Image (cartoon, rainbow over all chains, first blue to last red; front, side):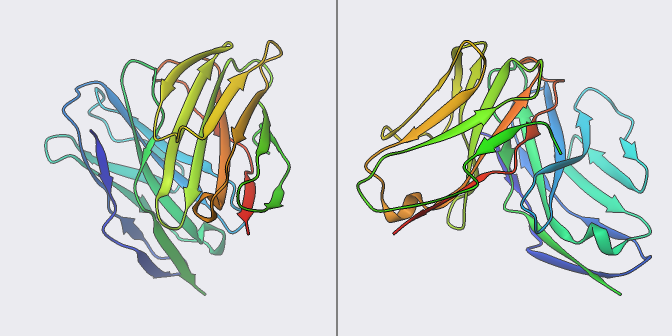
Length: 115
Length: 114
């Protein structure tokens, strides 16, 4: 079974600085997607960014980018120019190919933004 | 607003009782997923439906069941409730089941079992 590990329960960063959240996963599949979801205090799960395993180019969405290392099974999230609104729980998630399956989530990283 | 509607937002009940959680997917989405978020287990996938049929099962207990109706809304039924069933239950929807389809989450139903 696939597993997703987030080794940082909590991270803190100064406003306007850059922070990197770590995620590793374990799978024997070759076709899969990886995701980062954000959960602010409102509890809503919001998709931040996603990466297809077959794409070598790292995904980027505005201030958010990933470092996808397929051989190492690593998928980190970099947040540049951190803003107060970035404060939230961040979950790394995996979904295997085939389409008939849900997301497997890590335990999450609580990101604190210091003003 | 994701477009996925979950009702009720909060539910308080007693052990041994049965409750039904409701989810209306985004307009046009055929696939519905249910997830449970608890302090002990984190976020867990429970079950997936596509166009009225069950497509995948995750860590869903036998006391729990779900269905998707012809109008594509879905219900998650939880019976013989235990204290440990207290959690946030999310519904998510996507256009289809393919890997590339993004799952959009509702705001969740907070279940408290007393």
